[in-house]
Every structure is written in C-alpha cells, then in structure tokens.
Length: 159
Image (cartoon, rainbow, N blue to C red; front, side, top):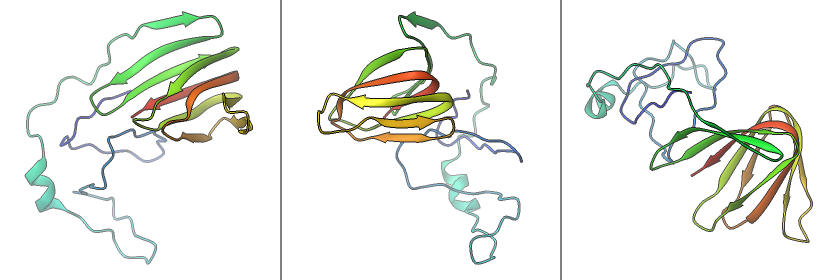
C-alpha cells in the first residue's frame, strides 16, 4: 500500500495489477504513456503543460510503509491500510462474518482479494449478493447495515 497525494508524479510498471483508490475526480494528466494507443489506434493525448502546473515538486517522503495494527474480532480481522480526508481503505480477513453501515453521505466498495462470500442487507426484499476472488461490489449510499459472510479477504473502501 502506497499513499500517493494529489500532484505527485507516479507510474505503474508492466505486469502489475493494482487497486488505485482515489478521490472522485475526472482529471488525470498524462506526462508519458509508454506509447500506448486508444481504441482507434492513436497514441493517447499527453498533458505535460497542464501537469507541470499542478505537480508537487517537493521531495517525496520515503515510500517505506509503517507497520499497521491488525484488530481481531470474532469472525474477522481488520487492518486499516490508509485514511485521508477523501477515503479510508481497510483489508478485512473474514472467517465467519462482519457487519458495517453504508450511510447516506456516500457509497462504499468491496473488492474481493481472495476466497468467496456474500453481502447481505437488512432489507427483506434484497437478496444476498454472492462474490468471489477478483470481483468488486458497489454499495450505494444509504444502504444502511450490511453483513459480509464467508471465507474471504476483501478491501473495504469508504469514500
């Protein structure tokens, strides 16, 4: 897990699978794109001049991560990976189940990293949603109390 603040130039190497969690924004400035092409076969647009205007030119702190506290509960363990004013990300190892709330203010996301399980809500008319490794679930704002059961590891992202 690496926290990359807005304005920090960063890149992703070949063969890497990432979960990039960020604040809601439709702005990405590309300064280099490895000569990739769009759906029409044209090189994707670069935005060097715009990017330079918003770049954070300070020397970044060392990327080495601090140890994180894992809290153990009956049925799961939870590890806070990152928290900032825009989002919070936890890694949750589920052995039986855990519950949480999706409040009116914002949606949440569950990304299954391993295993399988299901999400249940307290609404009688909503059927449980099953998931397995590699799948992502969007939980709309206002869903209220949810229960995840199974034998799985998930990322839970609260925005």
